[in-house]
Amino acid sequence: MINIFEVNETNEMIEKENLDVRTITMGISLLDCISDDLDKLNNNIYEKITAKAKNLVSVGKEIEGEFGIPIVNKRISVTPIALIGASACKGPDDFITVAKTLDKAAREVSVNFIGGYSALVSKGMTKADEDLIKSIPGALSSTKLVCSSVNLGSTKTGINMDAVRLMGQIIKETAKATAKEDSLGCAKLVVFCNAPDDNPFMAGAFHGVTEADSIINVGVSGPGVVNTVLKKVRGESFEVLCETIKRTAFKVTRVGQLVAGEASKRLGVPFGIVDLSLAPTPAIGDSVADILCEIGLEHAGAPGTTAALALLNDQVKKGGVMASSYVGGLSGAFIPVSEDQGMIDAVEAGSLSIEKLEAMTCVCSVGLDMIAIPGDTKASTISGLIADEMAIGMVNQKTTAVRVIPVVGKGVGEKVEFGGLLGYAPIMPVNEYSCDAFINRRGRIPAPIHSFKN
Image (cartoon, rainbow, N blue to C red):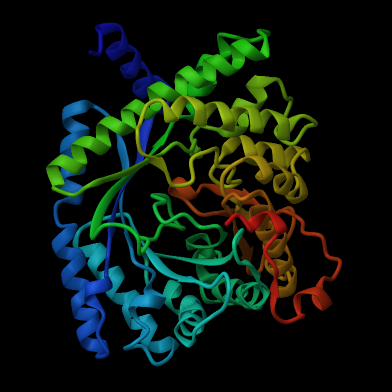
């Protein structure tokens, strides 16, 4: 039973500490939509999505109203489109028609985003995979709600360096294709190592082929809540610090579990997972960087940052797993620059660099996320950043990702405004020494020795 003290405590979190359910994401399998006729494929996809998700937004609003819990986004993820379109799509232009169908369906059911315009190429690329990847600039520049992801590596298979090289070029092309919007298309494109099948967060959400026909995954956000409770234990020992974070993560996750259960019941769709990630917003006080400062750092990026982030991430997971039987997705702390005011402040103060962010990704979720870089950054340099991040994920048996935005026409010292949850970002400098000869080698980086577990 929940007592009145806990009810009041949760209300306080919502009203004053920015607690919200960041997203309810409905995963939808499109495997039964496959056809070798492009028109029929697109029709099947539209009908399946609009039928399955027709009540998603209205149910989300009902739950918000009844429980007083803000649900910021209602989203859809689908089976990777490279698989679904392989029979009907004969080239990149055909895949773009599918992207437009996804966008149309997402608009019809009024969701915020739809993810799954994706390819899984950690070991090699089929023609369909390559065609979809080459279509990404056109797809993201001609749609509003479609998000794209590509998985380039895994601990079991190694890193597909041919795909890494190609994605550096695709990110540059996407930036150019959306240059009038400050290269916004790149904010909807992410590359992964060890991508999870049940991630509710964009831009990386897709519906894995091992999942049920449809499923509900929930992501909860509570950086502001954690930051507030840590103010009460300033100067206390690490033991007290860890216990405080753990207890708070438990309470935050219980809110997600409640919403997930209600959404599942009302929509008649199985509950999948609650993602434990601390996802920041540009709102003041809703920052992972601010938590690191409350732990004892002057700015994110100062010596000790990686250790503080490791502590935070571990305690969030320890508290969260006790609050739900089904924890999944990414589950940890996000460190996107543009979406976290504390991270922006750290960059502007000169304490946080891309190299330090890369070190931080060794101990948290995702990776180099929502980082604006000069528009004239070479494609091979972007590929080098991707390769480094993929290596961290592969060797450490964890999910890592890269979402960088080479903003056309802008350079270091300038800012770019994305708006909404995407926030704004200072353009960060990138190491300009060449990695061309490394990136232009062909083939794969082999899986690490510890991948052999059979």
